[in-house]
Length: 501
Image (cartoon, rainbow, N blue to C red; front, top):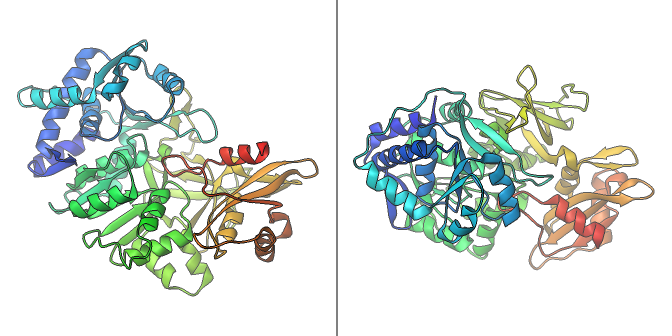
């Protein structure tokens, strides 16, 4: 079980198909296979232990990913938005390494010890040229070799390198994707950054299914819509903040005018109900899916499918309607349990920590070892609950729990209620220091365009639907909330600004 197995099958099965395109530049599956083999030779001869990429998406990305798998070294996509000192601390963890990057970074990265640096265009040109004639070596089929190291986003602390072994990612692909299931005309628009697990999973799943990948290196709603129309995109994945911006750009229109788009998946953060409802109106013929997963689980572990979306949107039953903000049900190959602080399994609708188990679950960090329990369960540090029908609801990180006077409160529960208010489009609830209660409940809200609300009105709204202790004692109105580029709310920034302000 090696990622190269997926590419070899694709090259043998439909080698002439276009595999990846970036602007006018394209690679067929057979060209990708040969280029990866040539690049693998270069990696092996360099003596490096890691192949890293510090760059936006380009055709060098799939070549680098499969070259690393071929050469038997981990592929390490790095966050190109980090500062110099932050990047240095990550690179120090993967020496010796070879780093593929943009021309502008060559000089600064060359100064780092134990680091070989190559420009993106040079790497890609050499792989394509040598791929036409080189004879690549065999690759290992050891499923326990490391395929990818992905540094976590570090929303609550320093980034850690999550270890994804070949057996984890290949297990996810084989359990969720059918080989050669895509038509030759199918195209997947990928706009998430390479260092996001969804970006890695999109490459592997598209290759195995035979789908053409259309890369959008830098997202804007306007460029996303234009590219989706020009390339007749059939499948796409976005994070919630991206979909919100797409919906904003389409404000006032009756439809998105994307007749080819059959499937639109989203995940990576909280999706406001108003955004998904409006999106379903704008994309009436598109199947929506909400995918929940973690870096440590090799992508998706639960999904709210198209039928569930439509059933929830059409229902007058508040229990069914609420499922529109759930992440659906676990994949057949994954087990999910909600547990309390003592590790006891909880019943339906009881809130606790989400634990997962399955072949695709890694739960391992570089230098820190496996975090799996002896029986294979992984504590996600995400809080949530499962309703009576098995639908999973995410309520934020366990670390974000507010403790007010000894009572534990989930920010997600309060946010969910506030988002039901017709004037609000986004909400963040955090705990702030309080002399009397230890922590007080504070909320930052964003109003929809043309709407407004008053603090007493919002406090009464929460009080009528939840216990009075959960009513925010402090509410501020902001123009927007801080998110990272993968759609995760940066609660620490919200909390810091409230405390300092």
